[in-house]
Amino acid sequence: MNVGSAHSPEEYLRDIIYTYRLSVPFFVDLSRPADLSLNHTINMYLTSEEGISLGVWHTVPESQWKEAQGKDLMWYQNTLNDGSPVFIYLHGNTGTRGDPHRVGVAKLLSALGYHVVVPDYRGFGDSTGEPTESGLTTDALHVYNWVKERSGDSLVVIWGHSLGTGVTSNTAVKLLEQGVVFDGVILEGAFNSERQQQQFHIFTWYYWTFPGIKNLFSFLTEEKKVVFPTEQNLKKMRSPILFLHSEDDHLVPIQTARQTYEVAVKAQSKDRVKFVTFDGSLGYLHNGLYRDPKLPGIIREFVKSL
Image (tube, rainbow, N blue to C red; front, top):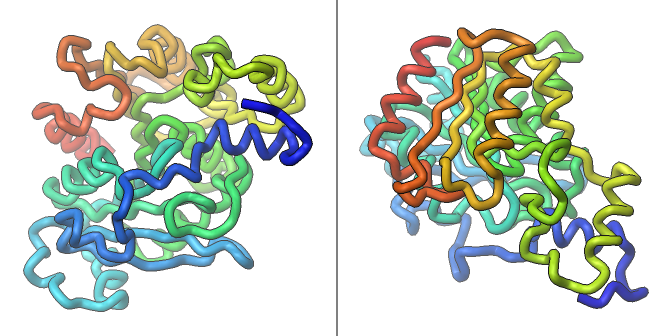
């Protein structure tokens, strides 16, 4: 990696942290979720702010799949008010909403009888713009408000994975400033920028061997170009929280997750903050928890507790 004059340090950091230009899986038409067996899902585009269009999927509960065939956007929007819980899934860095593990989460939640709304942040997938920490928070706020305007009294739960846990906590604090509290929050593979060593940082592990990257990353984080202050946010959050973490997570060590959980418990209580781990022998690593046969029951119990 040659840090030259063609790009600013901020542009390099954006590429490294978000790796949003890598649209995996390849050759997937995001406007056609049925190609990924999401055959009760509609693709749509929401305007987060002027000039920013977000590609979004809305999957209805699996029980409605027959009725959903051939239906338009208005029909899908109206179903959000049917009393079923609504999940907004905020994914991690790299790739799109079409990644297999993200599709897997959507299928899991739909099978449980929930609506699932999955956006691609600005710059990811077929969304326009360039990602920034504040921009991703703005996008999440817009999607949340869009859902709340249409979902009536239905529960709205935010599920953040990886980088999405940082977006989730940022969004929760922004809403808290407006007197709004998420009904429930799931943090899967939650990183903690304040505790993880930089060379094992979830965003930079791949790039750490490139010349100059250590100095670049140190400079930009010191300048607060990217913060995602999850720990500080958790001290303010008042939503019930469920942490999910694999003991063999190769990007966020389990000890970091436990420390992050303890911060949340201290801010609230063990009744409102739960921590569920998955044995490392199962091989789930950072992205595979959706495959666990016990996960549907864990999610169902969490929703019942809200």
